[in-house]
Length: 307
Image (cartoon, rainbow, N blue to C red; front, side):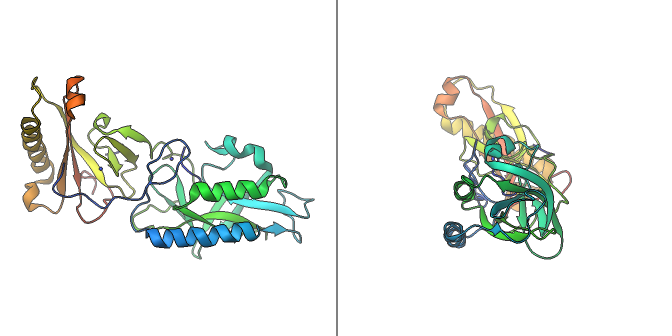
């Protein structure tokens, strides 16, 4: 089964609803979220501290210039590892700020968020490859402040040191990484996820998160997500009746759940949620009912087929 441009930091009626991940700030779309576990208080505190550090002073390398800026004596560097890297989707948006770039590596662990961008934890145990960007001096501070505001609630700016010895600002994932696949490097292969779509346009096997009943955020099924589409059907009924539509949806979704899971929703750990047309949508010709499976107390990783 399988079915934020996302921020680069280096870069949901039902019996019960699963915990709704936070809603990431993405330049093109987002009612964003993070995969489970980010405390709003902790996130705000972390971002507040980070913003103070950004305004107080950005890392400048006056002793050991990197190859990205060999003659710089007061260079401002940032380290990126996702869609802001040269050649990736968001680089064109920031290119005007960049004086030069070079490949670089820092210590840390890299994960795929499943939402169209990677997440890094700058801690021992691995390496995070990316690019060291040397910023235009006149706009460097403004760029870092804007980037930090964009990533607020998801990532926090921290100082990192490249393996070549250059200190740079990088954006670190605030939340938990439980269930996120570890990756060696960001290659953009899952960048299409993290899109806001009309929920009943999804197909069986697609995964998504934090739906408001109308719009859903697509997610890579191998990373933490809220729901998996179990069944999609167009009702034959011509006359609108909320009770009749709900009854028909319940019957079809429960049957689809039992066929796939092997037991009724009442007896299973998993649960099923029904998404049905509103009166206005029905009047416009929409008859689609969508059934999605979820875990009431946690996010899911994997699919009904693959586990």
